[in-house]
Image (cartoon, rainbow, N blue to C red; front, side, top):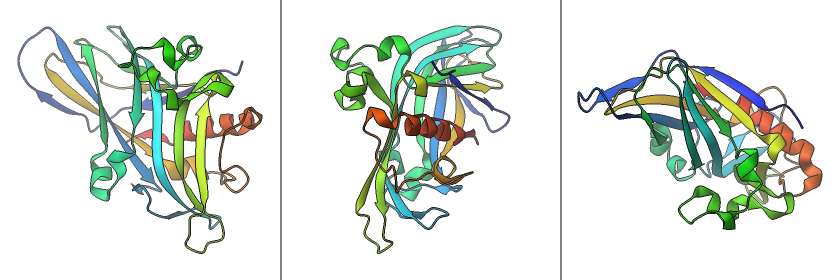
Length: 249
């Protein structure tokens, strides 16, 4: 099996903490604020963007799973959660894109310096199927499962492509990433201490230009859609590219 991909992100400045009380014990909240970008600019769904090779594209959906959230570095806490993050509606307009999508994680107060999670579904749960989970569990979403690959779809980046540059986006784009070999671990380091009844915000940027064109342009004309097991090489490539697109603001 391929070695688990790993990305370490250093959180230096810009944390926002708001206190709602003085209770020395209890839970606080870590807000992961996700912002989509394209070449540094706010990404807006269905707006046209141009790759370095001249190909025009737009985006209609960006979503992913995160599992196995842990806090460590001093105190330690394992949060056995599975969360489905859908950034589509939060990027419907420029104003919404500037605000981003906030995913709140409740954690026990303590001194932490490392937040780690898997981008995707861990192998134990990925060996199961949506019917194994109750309807309130994000793994019950049948549309996020690949029966042919016996895997959840870890990441979806969808949209359309204007292949002949005539202003009509005639080709659908469906970059679906899944399978245990596409699993990646992300680790954020910095002052992640949790204070009871308080909220700390962690700003995370996902720049899809970096995913599709940072070093080399991904060949969307040859592989605009990922649907078959024969495309495993493209799945692994896209997983690596998506991980490289993630930074701390």
